[in-house]
Length: 278
Image 1 (cartoon, one colour):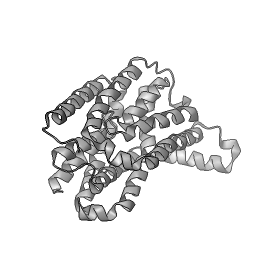
Image 2: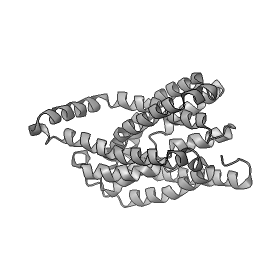
Image 3: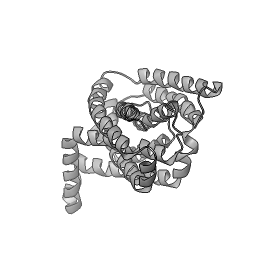
């Protein structure tokens, strides 16, 4: 992979990771347009590994909240009398919400890394999940807030998050839609989406690094992979701050319109034969 390609892909990953537009879908589309085979092990691993840069940006951005929640969790484990706090409950909620996608991801890893990377699936998922996002957004009451989030909420959101294993659905789009349907406000469910991303994306990045180390070395190369991860970190840090401000004042309509337009464009390219699906 050329250095400029790594920089471009890293920037796209960092910008789209926490937007409800599917970062994996965007990377899959762009990698295919750049001439890479999207079901090659090194490209699949590269796509997962550079997401760690975005996760690192999230950890730094939310470092005070993470420290407070981790401290409350540790205290709660030692003393039953300290388990009534919202931070202790939130920690358990994030843990439970991360379990479903880990189980499903490992069970269907081969299909996720090959069949579902087809641009037919990406384009279709971009369009179809936009309907779910529109329904959730238009029916959102937002009467519940972050302090009201329970383990049942995040378990349901975590199960819906499994849909994001299909490139084009969007992990953040899935979690945000599920949260809105649970009547949680947009800012709270967006923050929850950030927290749920940390164990999921970190685990996927570490697993791919271990399993595909040699393939990345012989294919994409670790130099471009590291550069893309660093670029992802820088861009994601700015994107997280912007998204929280934007969501506080706007609905998801602009993202829905964009998703449908991009999905239609991708399907048209594949149907015309201009781009191969994998």
